[in-house]
Every structure is written in structure tokens, then in C-alpha cells.
Image (cartoon, rainbow, N blue to C red):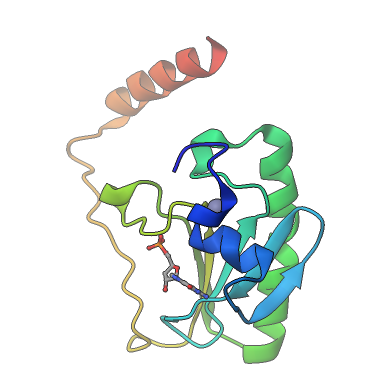
Amino acid sequence: MKRGAKMTECIFCKIIEGTIPSVKIYEDEHVYAFLDVMPVTKGHVLLIPKTHRENIYEFSEEEAARLFAAAPKIANALKEEFDPAGMNLLNNTGEFAGQSVFHFHLHFIPRYDDTDGFQPGWLPKTSEFPSERLTELGHAIRVQLES
Ligand code: 5GP
Ligand code: ZN
């Protein structure tokens, strides 16, 4: 869904509007947090901006700051309540990366043990990215940031 799309077309906008029910965790002027309806673990929360943004690319710096301002509060509440062994915060951007709802959301997934159902993990390719290659890549990204 594109920026400015009608709110009623988006399931998370409907949750913010209250036309689809949700278990609310936190709300302020800019953000809304609620329990994932298909939680991976106990306390799996989604934090979303109230303004429809499909993904991270669409955020202004101010919007990003407002969203992340709520993150420590939510993480600490989950930590206090459930005493997890750890927590994964993640966002899937784009269908290829696993995004299934196209209104930005940050997952908070409290972790309990090896069998809790969450399987993070990637295979580092250290031989493909020696330090010279990392230096080149870092330069290329900095050029983008400065352009
Ligand atoms: P994604 O795959 O886009 O990173 O995550 C979307 C998440 O939204 C999924 O974990 C899914 O369970 C959750 N979800 C989808 N529809 C609803 C809904 O109607 N209510 C709630 N609370 N969560 C939803
Ligand atoms: Zn939306």
C-alpha cells in the first residue's frame, strides 16, 4: 500500500481506528502497540506508527524517532512481566524479507529457551567479505548517505 493510501484498506490502520479489535499494550499520540494475534512466544508485541507507513523507507527522521521512543518502555514492560532470557526486536521489510502486513511494525519477541519457536539465524560469509571488501562497501554506503 502506498503512502497516503486510504486507512480503511489496511488491517493495522483498522486496528488503530478500532474497527478491528486488538489487545492494546500502549498508545500515545504517534504510536500504538498491541499483542500479535499469532504470537511466536508469550508477550509477542507489535509496535506501529499511527500514520500509515508501509516500511522504513517511508519514515521521516521525526517519525522514526517517535516510534523508537516507545520501544524501551515496551521492552522493559515485557522484561519485568515475563522475565525472558532474551528478546528479539525485528522488522521485516518487503515480501522477500517476510513482511506480510504492509504497515510498518516492529516485533518484540521475548525469548525463553531453544524450543520457544523463534529461529533467528544466518550464515556469516566471512570469506566473501574480508576487511578490504568491508572497507569498500562502507565507502559506497557513506557516499549514498552524503548524496
Ligand atoms: P510480518 O510478517 O509482516 O513481519 O508480521 C505481521 C504480523 O502481524 C504477524 O506476526 C501476524 O501474526 C500479525 N497479524 C496479522 N494480522 C493481525 C491482526 O489482525 N491482529 C493482530 N494482533 N496481529 C496480526
Ligand atoms: Zn496502515
